[in-house]
Amino acid sequence: NAGVTQTPKFRILKIGQSMTLQCTQDMNHNYMYWYRQDPGMGLKLIYYSVGAGITDKGEVPNGYNVSRSTTEDFPLRLELAAPSQTSVYFCASSGGLQYEQYFGPGTRLTVT
Amino acid sequence: GENVEQHPSTLSVQEGDSAVIKCTYSDSASNYFPWYKQELGKRPQLIIDIRSNVGEKKDQRIAVTLNKTAKHFSLHITETQPEDSAVYFCAARKSQAGTALIFGKGTTLSVSS
Image 1: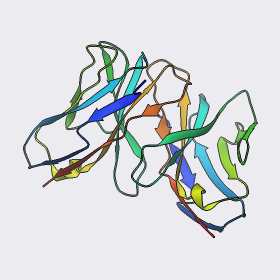
Image 2: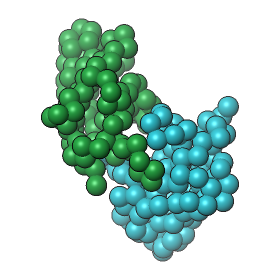
Image 3: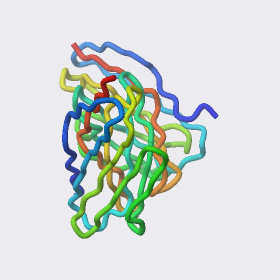
């Protein structure tokens, strides 16, 4: 199993550009999550999904959108990128509410 | 919603000493408490977790204790080694559909030899 994979690993965006961060898991997990991690800070939940077709907002959803059309994929869309969205983005998945969350390797995004 | 506070933010110990990291949570309905370790430039990885029907859990040099009455839980690392140096995050969640893990801000542990 590859686990949780994310692309791209690094990206530089100009202010106002848009992009999609890809996340795929091959563990047949229903639960998937997007977090952002700012330097020296913890993990802030952006959006999460409890199954295909179901998504919900986390702590910091503004400026982002998600979709979950399949169990495997959970892309995160940034519209009109802003410098405040410079961060490392982690996708994660879990098999249930009280099961381990497996994290992807992260995407380092810089908005200038 | 749930709020998780973690202390200290940085912790420096000598190799062989013990390290203790403490977390408090606000939602009494929370019943799952994992700890994650994140090495520099890497993804967070689960090192130990505890559920609310257990007061203490141990795995070799790592142990976690839970006090539901006081709403706090702690990570204990004994006989620390330089490879224990990392950022440690605590988290909490409820067993309720539609909820997610809420993380503390992290503790940077430095173990010097």
